[in-house]
Image (cartoon, rainbow, N blue to C red; front, top):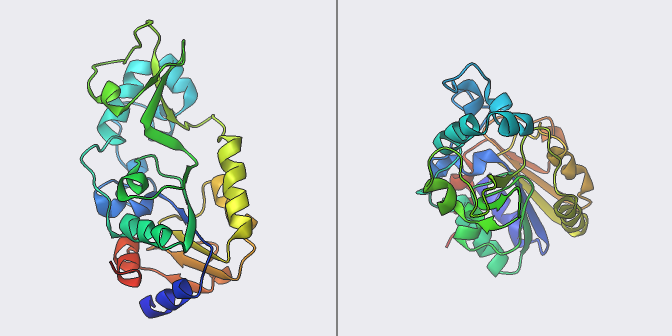
Amino acid sequence: MVSELSRIISGSRRIVFFGGAGVSTESGIPDFRSGDGLYNRSTGTRYAPEQVLSHSFFVRHTAEFYDYYRDHLLYPAALPNPAHLALARLEQEGRLTAVVTQNIDGLHQAAGSRTVLELHGSVHRNNCVRCGRGYGLDAILGSNGVPTCECGGVIKPDVVLYEEALDPAVMDAAVQHLSRADTLIVGGTSLVVYPAAGLVHAFGGDQLVLINKEATGYDHLATLVIHEPIGETLGAAVPA
């Protein structure tokens, strides 16, 4: 499997990588839908995780939102794993044109990737809802309760919550990269979260590779399917 992936990569000139939460699990960040993922864990409240991570909950219960957000979605000590590093090497070699990610952890950039399209935003960007002033992750980690701006406004993470739309500019850029790619590598995602998962249909190239521990609804369309950890797989296929 790894040798076939290496062959596909070697013969490609315009690779796009589309990844989900499974890309970061080998960095110690839990995913959402697996057996021990966030959505199968108690929030410590009477609310389900999907409720806590919604726009309306953020507006109505901001302090409770931040209690959960800090405890379950922020991993400042996490480091890039072999998957992140392999993708950065492919970009440096000129083979990979973009990383399209559903993750909000910033680990692709930490690994050295430059063209990263963050469909669901980033924990490293935060903005005052009143004046728009930007803040880094330290503003959230270094505060208690609800973080506030110097103007007195509430600071909100630049992450896409339930009930919020994806940034159309990011989506358009992802479609453009996918439409020009000769190879699409999809990894660490079950491809069930829309509209992000629908981006696969924008790919018009020849080689579709799916790397995910569990089967997906797109496996039958793929050139190559690998049901192994993505860090281990990409790390072996793209050696340093």
